[in-house]
Length: 387
Image (cartoon, rainbow, N blue to C red; front, side, top):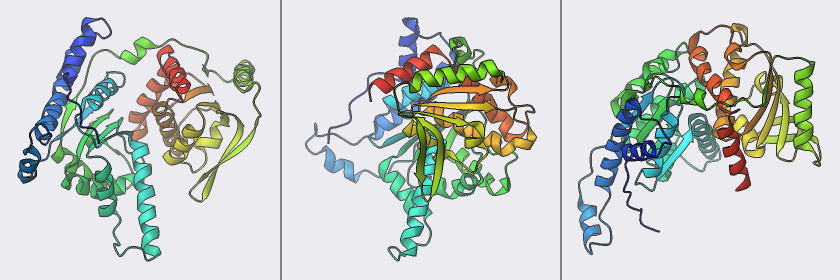
């Protein structure tokens, strides 16, 4: 195994370098958060064991007393303020081999799959450990001590119920958590079902991470927008023709048929698929009991997805709204190119801003805008060409 490389730059130095060449604008709020991330980088470097450069270094390293756990960081603030950029810089610089950067919904889908697999082992007599959480936490820690979550959010009750116990186990084992979010910890899962059972997780989180706010006055995502015809509104015959024309262009020369994605005993039906392009109606994805793992399976199979007829999302469509938020989060995180037709512009889709969905939907609007930008689409093209 190759030794971990030594890193010369900190997050704050990276920001300064990018600002000096004009790639970024000087932002004191971002720099403040960068210095907090540099604190974690420095602590990670300090605790790295001696290398083979010292003949006996490895022997003495083993005798060192266990070091105090490194406090993580939870960065919250409005959309488009640079949280994801800072997370990406930090993750690349982190001098630790066992690290994982994931979208929170993807991580929790993995956790639930592991819990299910453990319960099957218990049922089959392959283990006597009735509680799946400790062995799942142990397995996660064996793979990654540093966990980085972009856009940390909790909307699913099954996630909410397991988080407290899961992260108690992870933190006890020395897990370092760095996360970004639109909301401060005390507003996580706000108005959620049985929220009282979730509150212990917030106490645990605040015990092991520093909480900082990134309130830059500039929304950098909105500055990058170049509206391209990949989001069409309002719904009309013209919009329908536009979607059909785009579909015809992208599916040209490919066999078009329905498809089925098998998901742990259930099936995600794809009405139309042509190679790596798929087409759904809003109702196919958001009016059925689908979740993050289902949307992740779609994103992993298709790099371009059409979603027709996105309606207004009022209080009577709360479940559909939650699924739509998760859908866009997943597609954005996986770099999916989205073609959508909707009843209105993104900022007018949610008819009543209340509860946790109101907080989360600001992020959805920002992502729908950015998924139309030249930067996002060019990144998508580059990613696909490397496959």
